[in-house]
Amino acid sequence: MENLSLHEFVKSKRKSLGLSREELAQKAGVGLRFLRELEQGKETLKMNKVNQVLMLFGMQSGVVSMDRNNLIE
Image 1 (cartoon, rainbow, N blue to C red):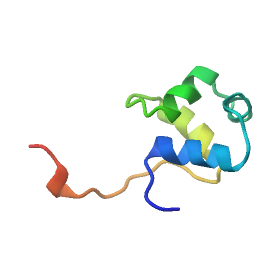
Image 2: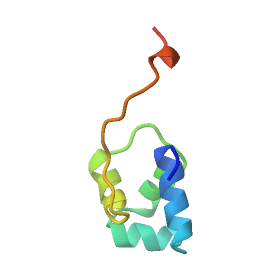
Image 3: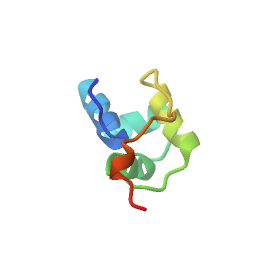
Image 4: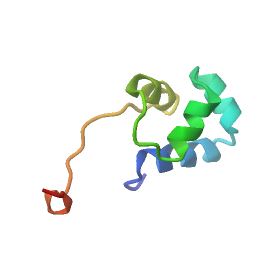
């Protein structure tokens, strides 16, 4: 998959599997509100819950390098 943001990845995978938000939230053991916030790109989320969702797709969160030219000093 191309370089998607976290919220784009989750939404794309959910839709490709034909799951509703309610179904994915239930399967991942997270609340519907949490999943909605995740898919909308909320910047502050509990990482353990993010990983619960990602685990269903065989993924986990991790560290990636950034283009340092885009950082604000």
